[in-house]
Image 1 (cartoon, protein in one colour):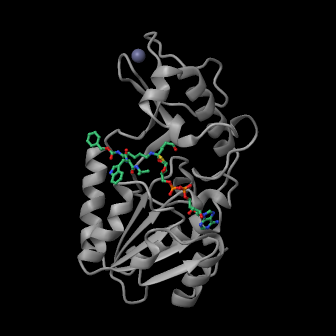
Image 2: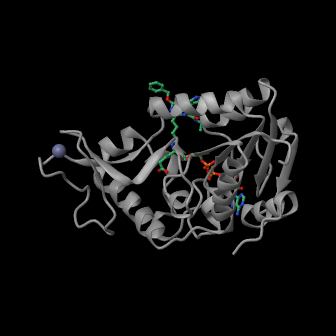
Image 3: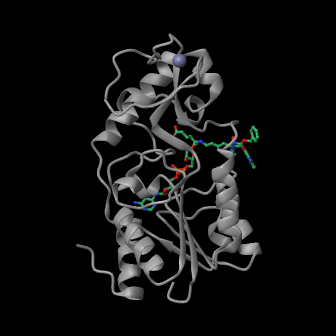
Length: 242
Ligand code: BJW
Ligand code: ZN
């Protein structure tokens, strides 16, 4: 980290786990325990049963509305400021839809999979921030009468083009690629570390368990990122969280 002059950090749901947000591949709780998230996060599921899918997203919006950034989010926000102050490049790329990185003060975040907080009308395409939880109707409707869907990227859908392009560019130019709290199974996000590696970057991973990326990394640290990240920054740069 001390040698790096251009860092890309890719985060996944594990970064928000210590804020109390369930990860995508965790077993879900309560009402939702019998549903497989991978089967709800698809355009087909929404067409089949928009009410069910909207209720699931509303449950997650409600959980996220109560969550605060944890030491991992705060450490990454600090690393961004520290890197830029020292004339280094830093890009935070996230697969998370909860916007907890924003809440921690990170800027210029590349949101690969969109966000839970913006909903888009399927008829007139109007996008609106939907911060009030819970909804009063499922699925929520636009003033034009059209159904609204969450502004996230479902399986089989293209990622936002400009964001994917900026991410590929950053990954191909970095000298340190850090993968944090992601199972590294969902593409194209999971391919970023591979392309960074082909271009000569060092690859590090912090995750609670090994992933398909682990054998390809230079360093794979296993544990909670809310503990490991602040400690790494402390050892490398004297970071002392407030
Ligand atoms: C901790 C921790 C702690 C816990 N500290 N760690 C190539 C090969 C194979 C398949 C494909 C391929 N290319 C494309 C595909 C298909 C598909 C795909 O990848 N499928 C695979 C699953 C096989 N990809 C797509 O469909 C993508 N679209 C696409 O390719 O389009 C092509 C196209 C082009 C042009 C026109 C049209 C189409 C889209 C992918 C969208 C993914 N969307 C989701 C849902 C978002 C909305 C929502 O949240 O509901 O994104 S799926 C879900 O997975 C979500 C996440 O962002 C994403 C990644 O999950 P993540 O973040 O890694 O979470 P988990 O739960 O899996 O892992 C958490 C990890 O943290 C675990 O390992 C824990 O151990 C760890 N952890 N606590 C550290 N405290
Ligand atoms: Zn509309």
